[in-house]
Length: 226
Ligand code: CA
Image 1 (cartoon, protein in one colour):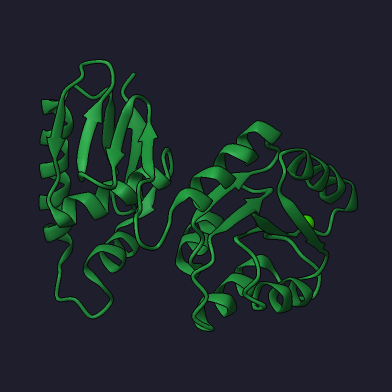
Image 2 (cartoon, rainbow, N blue to C red):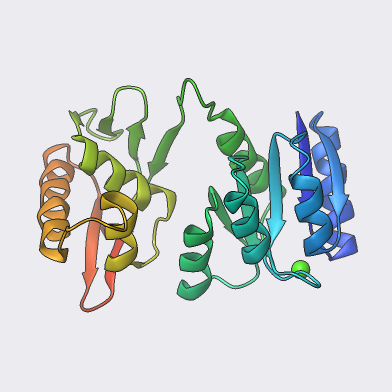
């Protein structure tokens, strides 16, 4: 498996390269946005680890151009900031996963395994948060503590997937609507609210210790139920 690492901090880049090589990945470093984009477009990599703050072209722009060019390569974004704005921009630009700095190498490896496991033909990746998991194959939402599970409808699945990929972050209503119903959709926000209420009922049904917290005027966040 061949990984492209786009990170301008030389010490961090060297440390990540070393760990990835120990784990038997092949890894090539790039240190600027344009160089990263050029290499990513070669089509020889299985995944890209992409920093946000880069010289000449930031990570968001690199990712957006890569996606505009039709590349579906899995991208793990690194960000020093865990601000809402950054995360929304990352989601919008087409990132598969977000890892805020500073991170543990074990976390980085786990994220990398998660995004590269997902194949085009057989997406078997399981997303989970706080003991709640969603299986891509069966579309079943499961609570580990109770062993209960429930099948989700297509829109419910897309919604839950979005929340599980971005736990503990407020995801704006506009972004959710655009992601699940599409940009040209007639879907109103109350449609979203209806589906959120379906999901809440299903989460309660399986005994999940998580909640979909609404923040007035902003959006929803998947949180652990204290
Ligand atoms: Ca940087």
